[in-house]
Image (tube, rainbow, N blue to C red; front, side, top):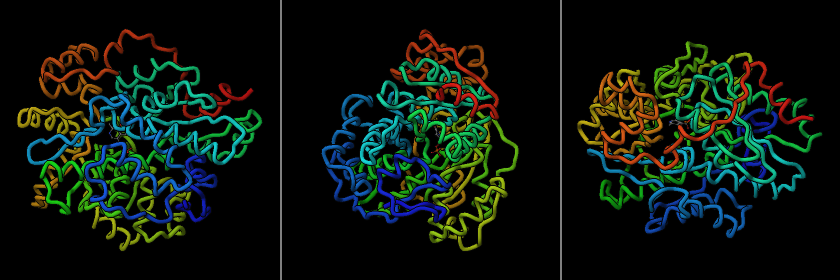
Length: 491
Ligand SMILES: *Cc1c(COP(=O)(O)O)cnc(C)c1O
């Protein structure tokens, strides 16, 4: 069963939690208990089998055959190569490559199964309406969600992205999506404004009533939806199994995990895997210059009223990390009253937690951040040292990992979650590798340049993107998002 972090709803089935996306009166769905799972039980299984096993306990209302079909996506060529999430051995650490899906970012790992999870959930609750998926994206979720939901009967998707706040490849990926049910809207603002507008639309009774008259209900493909988080738990088990198999860690020994963080979904999935019994010691939370979380883990104060920076790791340009609420709910001993006081509208996204909660957070998470020069330097020196290319998000993780090693002298085998292919951010990666030479190239030449320099192949989904026909994209001010949506969907 699932309950709300704000104590305003409980006893909901997995189907209800996934179909609703977010708790209607505010708050996020969390499982009421964490099923224990021994990693030994998973030894020798394929990724799709591991996925089925990890997800099954959280989805008691899903018949086995249904789940079987859903996880088949990990085995049907949607992800390139035999292994959807290989653990590359780099130096004395591991890099969990989560970008072998159709859009070259880790979001595919979950967004290729969410549409099916949602479809089944809607059937279970017997809803007589079509769904409208609202997505706020800092770049990667948008395309991954569009790919997952395009051309699905009974489902519509509207993606809001910050105009000028995503990379050229990311923008082009979104605007070239086909499908009769896809809408892409450029917002003249930043990601937080997109996300806040989407959350407000979810909470607006008036808007929901109007949609209902048009036989439509909202759902979410952002990581506020439990159906997004659940498939992400799987790959931490998978990483551990590979680390044991590669003899990087003794069977049963602990590992550390580094997560380049934005909305805190990926990190939360690692924490949930840990709660299920996976031997993870520290989780390292890596932020870019938008380092709200780094400050939080140092002081216990979440201060989102601060300068917003656009960086070369745009998918981490986030000041209000939605899933942090779920983490705090565990760290404060599941105290919904405290969550309510911290997430009170009047606080404008800023609050301070009690010392015990902070201590609980610090025991599990080490937090650090890297600025843009450090990120570029890390891409460059890592390539020299290991002939391995990091994208700018994973490079932030790498830098914070180096800082962690220096300050802690911890030699535990560490897995860095690699969240995107370097080709998605080719020109900045080339600037890092070649200095300013890279600057003279456009993004499409940079893809070729990066391929030549590294001998890595350009991922399929990014090939020929410049030649594809782009849709004309609607654009609006953040305060006009609701109007825009009504214009598109309400007769
Ligand atoms: C979404 C994203 C992140 C941040 O992940 P969260 O789950 O939002 O913390 C980091 N890197 C890349 C490349 C992403 O697309």
